[in-house]
Image (cartoon, rainbow, N blue to C red):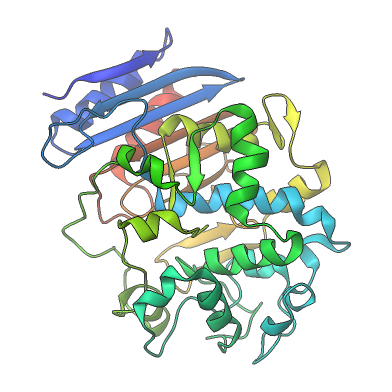
Length: 372
Protein backbone atom coordinates (compact mmCIF):
# COMPACT_ATOMS: atom_id res chain seq x y z
CA UNK A 1 0.00 0.00 0.00
CA UNK A 2 1.33 3.44 -0.92
CA UNK A 3 1.87 6.01 1.79
CA UNK A 4 -0.30 9.09 1.38
CA UNK A 5 1.22 12.34 2.61
CA UNK A 6 0.08 15.93 2.84
CA UNK A 7 -2.70 18.14 4.13
CA UNK A 8 -6.50 18.07 3.91
CA UNK A 9 -8.62 20.77 5.58
CA UNK A 10 -11.51 19.78 7.80
CA UNK A 11 -14.52 18.78 5.72
CA UNK A 12 -12.50 17.64 2.71
CA UNK A 13 -11.55 14.18 3.99
CA UNK A 14 -13.58 12.46 1.21
CA UNK A 15 -11.02 13.81 -1.30
CA UNK A 16 -8.20 12.08 0.56
CA UNK A 17 -10.24 8.88 0.56
CA UNK A 18 -10.65 9.02 -3.22
CA UNK A 19 -6.95 9.77 -3.64
CA UNK A 20 -6.11 6.70 -1.54
CA UNK A 21 -8.61 4.56 -3.46
CA UNK A 22 -6.90 5.41 -6.75
CA UNK A 23 -3.72 3.90 -5.32
CA UNK A 24 -5.44 0.95 -3.69
CA UNK A 25 -7.00 0.07 -7.06
CA UNK A 26 -3.54 -0.09 -8.66
CA UNK A 27 -4.24 2.90 -10.90
CA UNK A 28 -1.32 5.02 -9.71
CA UNK A 29 2.45 4.89 -9.45
CA UNK A 30 2.91 8.38 -8.02
CA UNK A 31 0.58 11.37 -7.95
CA UNK A 32 -0.32 14.68 -6.38
CA UNK A 33 -3.54 16.64 -5.96
CA UNK A 34 -3.92 20.20 -4.73
CA UNK A 35 -6.94 22.48 -4.33
CA UNK A 36 -6.93 26.17 -3.35
CA UNK A 37 -10.10 27.96 -2.21
CA UNK A 38 -10.17 31.74 -1.66
CA UNK A 39 -6.39 31.76 -1.47
CA UNK A 40 -6.19 28.95 1.11
CA UNK A 41 -4.64 25.60 0.27
CA UNK A 42 -7.37 23.23 1.42
CA UNK A 43 -5.88 20.06 -0.08
CA UNK A 44 -2.25 19.23 -0.86
CA UNK A 45 -1.71 15.49 -1.22
CA UNK A 46 1.16 13.36 -2.48
CA UNK A 47 1.48 9.62 -2.70
CA UNK A 48 3.29 6.71 -4.27
CA UNK A 49 6.63 6.73 -5.99
CA UNK A 50 8.55 9.03 -8.30
CA UNK A 51 10.43 6.16 -9.96
CA UNK A 52 9.43 2.97 -11.71
CA UNK A 53 11.53 0.88 -9.29
CA UNK A 54 9.33 2.16 -6.42
CA UNK A 55 12.31 3.24 -4.37
CA UNK A 56 11.91 7.04 -4.36
CA UNK A 57 8.86 8.44 -2.58
CA UNK A 58 6.76 11.05 -4.40
CA UNK A 59 6.86 14.16 -2.22
CA UNK A 60 6.14 17.88 -2.36
CA UNK A 61 9.40 18.48 -4.26
CA UNK A 62 8.72 15.97 -7.04
CA UNK A 63 8.39 17.56 -10.47
CA UNK A 64 6.48 15.93 -13.31
CA UNK A 65 5.73 16.99 -16.88
CA UNK A 66 2.05 17.89 -17.23
CA UNK A 67 2.05 17.86 -21.05
CA UNK A 68 -0.91 19.81 -22.47
CA UNK A 69 -2.03 21.11 -19.10
CA UNK A 70 0.89 23.45 -19.82
CA UNK A 71 -1.23 25.22 -22.46
CA UNK A 72 -3.49 26.89 -19.93
CA UNK A 73 -0.43 28.31 -18.14
CA UNK A 74 1.15 29.50 -21.38
CA UNK A 75 -2.13 31.19 -22.26
CA UNK A 76 -1.85 33.24 -19.06
CA UNK A 77 1.61 34.44 -20.06
CA UNK A 78 0.35 35.51 -23.48
CA UNK A 79 -2.55 37.36 -21.88
CA UNK A 80 -0.12 39.29 -19.71
CA UNK A 81 1.67 40.77 -22.75
CA UNK A 82 -1.08 40.89 -25.39
CA UNK A 83 -1.97 44.45 -24.35
CA UNK A 84 1.26 45.62 -25.96
CA UNK A 85 -0.58 45.24 -29.27
CA UNK A 86 -3.21 47.86 -30.16
CA UNK A 87 -5.60 45.19 -31.44
CA UNK A 88 -4.74 42.59 -28.85
CA UNK A 89 -5.89 39.09 -29.79
CA UNK A 90 -7.40 40.42 -33.02
CA UNK A 91 -3.93 41.30 -34.32
CA UNK A 92 -3.03 39.30 -37.40
CA UNK A 93 -0.13 36.98 -36.68
CA UNK A 94 1.77 38.30 -39.69
CA UNK A 95 1.84 41.77 -38.08
CA UNK A 96 4.30 40.47 -35.47
CA UNK A 97 5.74 37.50 -37.41
CA UNK A 98 6.08 38.55 -41.04
CA UNK A 99 7.21 35.18 -42.39
CA UNK A 100 4.04 33.52 -41.10
CA UNK A 101 1.74 35.42 -43.47
CA UNK A 102 1.92 33.10 -46.49
CA UNK A 103 0.21 30.10 -48.08
CA UNK A 104 -3.28 31.02 -46.93
CA UNK A 105 -2.28 32.15 -43.43
CA UNK A 106 -2.33 35.88 -44.17
CA UNK A 107 -5.52 36.66 -42.24
CA UNK A 108 -5.06 34.45 -39.17
CA UNK A 109 -5.35 36.42 -35.94
CA UNK A 110 -3.55 35.61 -32.73
CA UNK A 111 -6.88 34.74 -31.11
CA UNK A 112 -7.77 32.34 -33.91
CA UNK A 113 -4.38 30.66 -33.73
CA UNK A 114 -4.57 30.22 -29.96
CA UNK A 115 -8.07 28.72 -30.22
CA UNK A 116 -6.89 25.99 -32.60
CA UNK A 117 -8.39 27.43 -35.78
CA UNK A 118 -5.17 27.79 -37.82
CA UNK A 119 -5.15 24.34 -39.49
CA UNK A 120 -1.53 23.70 -38.48
CA UNK A 121 -2.00 20.58 -36.35
CA UNK A 122 1.19 18.96 -37.59
CA UNK A 123 3.22 17.99 -40.63
CA UNK A 124 1.51 15.77 -43.18
CA UNK A 125 4.83 15.16 -44.95
CA UNK A 126 7.80 13.66 -43.09
CA UNK A 127 10.16 15.85 -41.08
CA UNK A 128 13.20 14.91 -39.03
CA UNK A 129 11.75 14.35 -35.51
CA UNK A 130 14.84 16.04 -34.10
CA UNK A 131 13.48 19.31 -35.51
CA UNK A 132 11.05 19.41 -32.57
CA UNK A 133 14.04 19.95 -30.27
CA UNK A 134 14.90 23.23 -32.06
CA UNK A 135 11.99 25.60 -31.39
CA UNK A 136 13.26 28.33 -33.71
CA UNK A 137 13.61 26.03 -36.70
CA UNK A 138 10.35 24.24 -35.95
CA UNK A 139 8.51 27.57 -35.81
CA UNK A 140 10.07 28.54 -39.13
CA UNK A 141 8.87 25.25 -40.63
CA UNK A 142 5.34 26.02 -39.44
CA UNK A 143 5.53 29.47 -41.03
CA UNK A 144 6.27 27.69 -44.34
CA UNK A 145 3.36 25.27 -43.94
CA UNK A 146 0.03 25.41 -45.76
CA UNK A 147 -2.98 24.99 -43.44
CA UNK A 148 -4.92 21.73 -43.59
CA UNK A 149 -8.20 23.65 -43.68
CA UNK A 150 -9.19 27.25 -44.32
CA UNK A 151 -8.25 29.07 -41.12
CA UNK A 152 -11.16 30.40 -39.15
CA UNK A 153 -13.72 28.04 -40.69
CA UNK A 154 -13.25 25.15 -38.22
CA UNK A 155 -11.17 24.19 -35.22
CA UNK A 156 -9.03 21.16 -34.50
CA UNK A 157 -6.76 20.65 -31.54
CA UNK A 158 -3.07 21.42 -32.16
CA UNK A 159 -1.47 19.09 -29.58
CA UNK A 160 2.18 20.09 -30.00
CA UNK A 161 2.50 22.74 -32.72
CA UNK A 162 0.43 25.17 -30.62
CA UNK A 163 3.36 25.72 -28.30
CA UNK A 164 5.89 26.55 -31.00
CA UNK A 165 3.44 28.96 -32.61
CA UNK A 166 2.57 30.62 -29.30
CA UNK A 167 6.19 30.78 -28.21
CA UNK A 168 7.30 32.43 -31.42
CA UNK A 169 4.53 35.04 -31.18
CA UNK A 170 5.58 35.94 -27.63
CA UNK A 171 9.21 36.23 -28.68
CA UNK A 172 8.31 38.45 -31.64
CA UNK A 173 6.23 40.77 -29.43
CA UNK A 174 8.55 41.02 -26.43
CA UNK A 175 12.00 39.82 -27.44
CA UNK A 176 11.81 37.37 -24.53
CA UNK A 177 10.79 33.74 -24.42
CA UNK A 178 7.49 32.65 -22.95
CA UNK A 179 9.26 30.53 -20.34
CA UNK A 180 11.41 33.47 -19.27
CA UNK A 181 8.36 35.69 -18.72
CA UNK A 182 6.67 32.88 -16.80
CA UNK A 183 9.68 32.47 -14.56
CA UNK A 184 10.43 36.15 -13.98
CA UNK A 185 6.95 37.67 -13.82
CA UNK A 186 4.78 34.83 -12.49
CA UNK A 187 6.71 32.13 -10.66
CA UNK A 188 9.78 33.70 -9.03
CA UNK A 189 7.93 36.56 -7.27
CA UNK A 190 5.43 34.10 -5.74
CA UNK A 191 7.75 31.15 -5.16
CA UNK A 192 5.88 28.92 -7.62
CA UNK A 193 7.73 25.75 -8.62
CA UNK A 194 6.69 25.48 -12.28
CA UNK A 195 8.96 25.58 -15.31
CA UNK A 196 8.69 25.76 -19.09
CA UNK A 197 12.30 25.13 -19.93
CA UNK A 198 13.72 23.21 -16.98
CA UNK A 199 17.19 24.10 -15.68
CA UNK A 200 19.62 21.19 -15.63
CA UNK A 201 19.97 21.58 -11.88
CA UNK A 202 16.31 20.54 -11.45
CA UNK A 203 16.31 17.42 -13.67
CA UNK A 204 17.04 15.14 -10.73
CA UNK A 205 13.66 16.00 -9.20
CA UNK A 206 11.66 14.83 -12.24
CA UNK A 207 9.56 11.70 -11.83
CA UNK A 208 9.87 8.74 -14.16
CA UNK A 209 6.96 8.47 -16.59
CA UNK A 210 5.20 5.14 -17.03
CA UNK A 211 3.76 5.35 -20.52
CA UNK A 212 0.25 4.10 -21.35
CA UNK A 213 -0.05 0.67 -22.89
CA UNK A 214 -2.77 1.81 -25.29
CA UNK A 215 -2.93 4.51 -27.97
CA UNK A 216 -4.90 7.68 -27.20
CA UNK A 217 -8.64 7.26 -27.57
CA UNK A 218 -9.09 9.30 -30.74
CA UNK A 219 -12.36 7.89 -32.07
CA UNK A 220 -12.73 7.47 -35.82
CA UNK A 221 -9.41 8.28 -37.47
CA UNK A 222 -9.19 11.01 -40.11
CA UNK A 223 -6.28 12.72 -41.85
CA UNK A 224 -6.18 15.52 -39.27
CA UNK A 225 -5.82 13.06 -36.40
CA UNK A 226 -3.15 11.12 -38.27
CA UNK A 227 -1.17 14.30 -38.86
CA UNK A 228 -1.55 15.53 -35.29
CA UNK A 229 -0.87 12.29 -33.44
CA UNK A 230 -0.12 9.19 -35.45
CA UNK A 231 2.84 9.73 -37.78
CA UNK A 232 6.37 8.72 -36.76
CA UNK A 233 7.36 12.40 -36.82
CA UNK A 234 4.29 13.84 -35.03
CA UNK A 235 6.05 14.75 -31.77
CA UNK A 236 9.46 15.09 -30.16
CA UNK A 237 11.20 12.36 -28.24
CA UNK A 238 9.94 13.04 -24.72
CA UNK A 239 11.76 12.67 -21.45
CA UNK A 240 15.41 13.31 -22.27
CA UNK A 241 17.49 16.19 -20.99
CA UNK A 242 17.19 18.15 -24.24
CA UNK A 243 13.40 17.86 -24.16
CA UNK A 244 13.22 19.07 -20.58
CA UNK A 245 15.67 21.91 -21.22
CA UNK A 246 14.01 23.56 -24.22
CA UNK A 247 10.73 25.46 -24.12
CA UNK A 248 7.65 23.77 -25.56
CA UNK A 249 4.77 25.89 -24.23
CA UNK A 250 2.22 23.32 -25.36
CA UNK A 251 3.73 20.21 -23.88
CA UNK A 252 6.70 20.23 -21.52
CA UNK A 253 5.80 22.32 -18.50
CA UNK A 254 7.19 20.69 -15.34
CA UNK A 255 5.73 21.28 -11.92
CA UNK A 256 4.01 20.00 -8.83
CA UNK A 257 0.28 19.75 -8.25
CA UNK A 258 0.56 22.74 -5.95
CA UNK A 259 2.36 24.92 -8.50
CA UNK A 260 -0.12 24.06 -11.25
CA UNK A 261 -3.06 24.83 -8.96
CA UNK A 262 -1.44 28.12 -7.96
CA UNK A 263 -1.12 29.21 -11.58
CA UNK A 264 -4.62 28.07 -12.57
CA UNK A 265 -5.74 30.09 -9.56
CA UNK A 266 -5.20 33.13 -11.78
CA UNK A 267 -8.26 31.97 -13.75
CA UNK A 268 -10.18 31.63 -10.48
CA UNK A 269 -9.27 35.13 -9.33
CA UNK A 270 -9.82 37.40 -12.32
CA UNK A 271 -6.22 37.59 -13.49
CA UNK A 272 -4.72 38.10 -10.02
CA UNK A 273 -1.99 36.14 -8.23
CA UNK A 274 -1.33 36.69 -4.53
CA UNK A 275 -3.61 39.70 -4.68
CA UNK A 276 -1.59 41.33 -7.47
CA UNK A 277 -3.09 41.94 -10.95
CA UNK A 278 -0.92 40.12 -13.50
CA UNK A 279 -3.40 40.36 -16.36
CA UNK A 280 -5.38 43.55 -17.12
CA UNK A 281 -9.17 43.23 -16.98
CA UNK A 282 -9.68 43.71 -20.72
CA UNK A 283 -7.03 41.14 -21.61
CA UNK A 284 -8.43 38.70 -19.05
CA UNK A 285 -11.93 38.95 -20.54
CA UNK A 286 -10.51 38.36 -24.02
CA UNK A 287 -8.39 35.46 -22.78
CA UNK A 288 -11.30 33.63 -21.17
CA UNK A 289 -14.26 34.26 -23.49
CA UNK A 290 -15.52 31.57 -25.84
CA UNK A 291 -13.89 31.65 -29.28
CA UNK A 292 -15.03 28.29 -30.66
CA UNK A 293 -17.56 25.66 -29.66
CA UNK A 294 -18.30 22.60 -31.76
CA UNK A 295 -17.06 19.35 -33.19
CA UNK A 296 -13.29 19.20 -33.02
CA UNK A 297 -11.53 17.97 -36.15
CA UNK A 298 -8.79 16.29 -34.09
CA UNK A 299 -10.21 15.41 -30.68
CA UNK A 300 -13.23 13.06 -30.55
CA UNK A 301 -15.29 15.63 -28.62
CA UNK A 302 -17.28 18.79 -28.90
CA UNK A 303 -14.71 21.27 -27.57
CA UNK A 304 -14.95 24.86 -26.41
CA UNK A 305 -11.80 26.97 -26.49
CA UNK A 306 -10.95 30.41 -25.26
CA UNK A 307 -7.56 31.91 -26.21
CA UNK A 308 -5.48 28.82 -25.41
CA UNK A 309 -7.41 27.44 -22.46
CA UNK A 310 -10.48 25.20 -22.54
CA UNK A 311 -13.90 26.13 -21.25
CA UNK A 312 -15.86 23.51 -19.35
CA UNK A 313 -18.54 22.62 -21.90
CA UNK A 314 -18.27 18.87 -21.22
CA UNK A 315 -18.64 19.18 -17.44
CA UNK A 316 -15.53 17.13 -16.75
CA UNK A 317 -13.94 19.95 -14.72
CA UNK A 318 -16.73 20.26 -12.18
CA UNK A 319 -20.26 21.63 -12.51
CA UNK A 320 -19.50 25.23 -13.55
CA UNK A 321 -19.51 25.83 -17.34
CA UNK A 322 -17.53 29.05 -16.73
CA UNK A 323 -14.56 27.11 -15.35
CA UNK A 324 -11.31 27.43 -17.33
CA UNK A 325 -9.30 24.25 -17.52
CA UNK A 326 -7.06 21.91 -19.48
CA UNK A 327 -5.97 18.28 -19.46
CA UNK A 328 -2.65 16.74 -20.43
CA UNK A 329 -1.47 13.55 -22.11
CA UNK A 330 -1.79 10.64 -19.72
CA UNK A 331 -4.23 12.17 -17.28
CA UNK A 332 -3.06 15.44 -15.71
CA UNK A 333 -5.73 18.08 -15.16
CA UNK A 334 -6.07 21.62 -13.84
CA UNK A 335 -8.98 24.01 -13.42
CA UNK A 336 -9.83 27.49 -12.25
CA UNK A 337 -13.45 28.14 -11.22
CA UNK A 338 -14.09 31.92 -11.10
CA UNK A 339 -17.42 31.62 -9.31
CA UNK A 340 -16.01 29.60 -6.41
CA UNK A 341 -12.56 31.21 -6.51
CA UNK A 342 -11.36 27.63 -6.59
CA UNK A 343 -8.43 26.08 -8.42
CA UNK A 344 -7.23 22.49 -8.44
CA UNK A 345 -4.64 20.32 -10.14
CA UNK A 346 -3.96 16.61 -10.47
CA UNK A 347 -0.58 15.34 -11.67
CA UNK A 348 0.77 11.81 -11.92
CA UNK A 349 3.41 9.65 -13.59
CA UNK A 350 1.40 6.54 -14.53
CA UNK A 351 -0.25 7.58 -17.75
CA UNK A 352 -3.57 6.44 -19.14
CA UNK A 353 -4.86 6.61 -22.70
CA UNK A 354 -7.43 9.31 -21.90
CA UNK A 355 -7.05 12.62 -23.70
CA UNK A 356 -9.59 14.23 -21.39
CA UNK A 357 -11.62 13.08 -18.44
CA UNK A 358 -9.23 10.57 -16.90
CA UNK A 359 -11.38 8.76 -14.29
CA UNK A 360 -8.78 9.23 -11.55
CA UNK A 361 -8.88 12.98 -11.93
CA UNK A 362 -12.64 13.15 -12.38
CA UNK A 363 -13.23 11.25 -9.17
CA UNK A 364 -11.04 13.72 -7.30
CA UNK A 365 -12.77 16.74 -8.83
CA UNK A 366 -16.20 15.30 -8.12
CA UNK A 367 -15.22 14.59 -4.52
CA UNK A 368 -13.83 18.11 -4.16
CA UNK A 369 -17.04 19.74 -5.35
CA UNK A 370 -19.05 17.34 -3.21
CA UNK A 371 -17.35 18.82 -0.14
CA UNK A 372 -18.11 22.46 -0.97
